[in-house]
Length: 462
Image 1: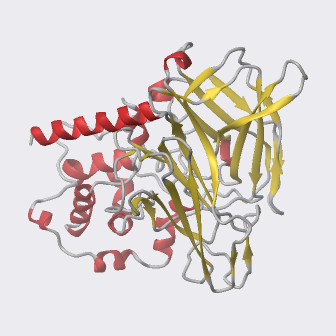
Image 2: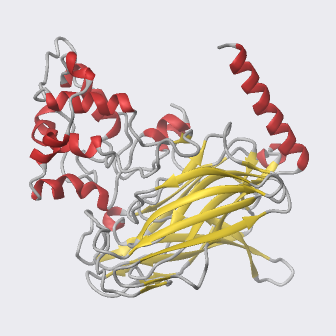
């Protein structure tokens, strides 16, 4: 199984999984059927056994299984049939799987894209419209999802267990109260520099809904002074994030003689469908790190880093029953490649976009648009290496985010509240996490030439 195939396996946590239950409570099962329009696929008899079972097994069971975070199990026909109209409603409206990334705008080639293909959506819709029949299994058995255990590391099936696991010190999180921050240190234990292949942050047990974010910075020991000095960001975690996979040929370094400084934001009681609402004792957050082989740093041509890129810092105010928009501009004095994009906000943020402005031509290129963003699903959108955006020296990243403090925002806890920039869950933030590979001019020109050659080969074979 490749990294892309494994990333395609969905891992659902947070508020989005409550969608089916909420819709049922609102009596929307009938609405799901009423709003649907007949599709041409209706001409064929669609059954669960022949057409639907594999789609749900591949895309839903990772969450909706015993020990998973989904509100119901969806591992066989008997479990699925009562929810069929509701599944149709959520799938048809692209609300499930919960992956907010707009179709038809900007780059669409992503590693670990959770979105269903349109043909899969059409199949599920037609199946429900035809009465959700089970069909004849014959001598076949029900497909079984190839998944790690619910509490295992996300990349374990492909990469094995992490080479390095860094645990935060335990802390009790009460059932009620104000936002909390926990900032322990932990040693990496490395005696030489290593390149990171993949990385995941994992709140232990049922703590996923109480860990709002868990940032980690690396500090390196200065042998002369005996003091630790800032090195850079290790990784970032926010609710719902799956993990990061580094592209081949670059190195995000985990340095020798280093320690990690945690910055963990905790929200007592939790947020979303998996919120426990009770005290969590000895809550631990873990970082799992998969490393490239020793010596890889000598083979990798370029360095990659992950940084926080601010938008209009200090000026974000969203009035009661109002809206707001922020934007930030960032350029580099050398060519770069953008490897991933992850916008960040809290409960009032609803949309985000990434663009590139080229001063030499005055042209603006749309890269990514997220129009139905939710704070319970912080997706790290990893661009496929063959299309990841290339910025020549002086090109400008344009990052925009929109905020909705009205009753129309389903995530808004109180539209009467004045919202300002801050670290609490009730406040807002306005930044994006972006992974950047830093190139030189020769490397930039080489990638451009490789892509042009691949394009010409593709045209020649058509």
